[in-house]
Image (cartoon, rainbow, N blue to C red; front, side, top):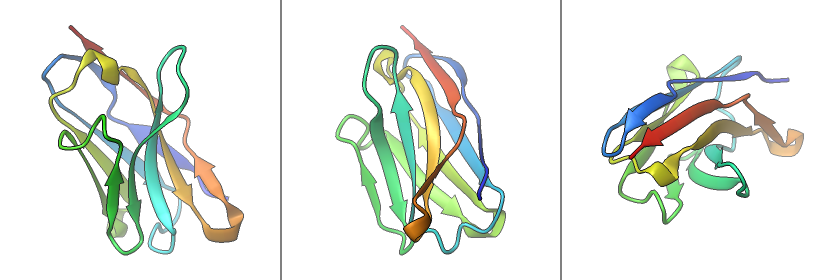
Length: 116
């Protein structure tokens, strides 16, 4: 079992920035991938960004060029740097970790609200 704890959410004006953090209860070195998802009110869950064990990253088209996912294996932490935030980015952001056959672990989420 792995616990994932997100932090860094909050209220920001459009055009601003936030940096989300996700700390895992054990080493993230061997996870196949770690990702950030978001769920906005009335919308389906959306995969925002993924970082694979080899360092490759993928982004949703809606955040490409604005968001950056990174990881610090020594600190068991994954980050999501969010720049040029838009009201459409308002959502609860969840961290997730893919642990091979064990499947995905999920954090409780952190609220991000972007005001216009």
